Length: 232
Image (cartoon, rainbow, N blue to C red):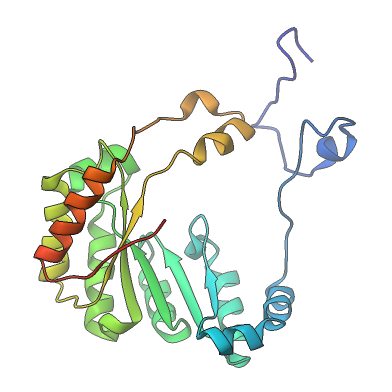
């Protein structure tokens, strides 16, 4: 305890959860729990009737699912054995081994494309986009456009301008992709998550994504011959 409140040494934290259990006012809380792949497969299989009626299935999201590749593919294999449709949402930054297994064990890949410019991608994301773009192009070549959907997070000050969008859409054309393009509008929901993990000062508000910007981007997507799908 300090005069400014609780000071956490995050370098020593093992995420054991004891502090959360001991906190009488629940100021500290542990969110989530660990599961085995078999447990999750059993839980989601209870909704099999709903999947069959709706034509849906299970989407594995994150974070980045391929960071836990062994767990991810164990889960996908179990879901496929149960006859459940599987989708994986990925940032596209994964190695060759994961590429091959994603082709085999997932029915649909929701593939984030944040920027086509490698310099700007590294500046904001922290890594090059070379592997990401290569993986997307390879997927289109290997499995076709029906099993992959590009998803563009539309972020003011990063890629919501005409030049950035044209760059991404030009890349999609060059890759011979032929399906719809999903657009994910920026929101400020992450701010509370930053605060919860003690990194509120690191949060960067990228500004408002106006209806006018959305309309302009819709038009750009259509001009390339793609169907724009804005996810709310």
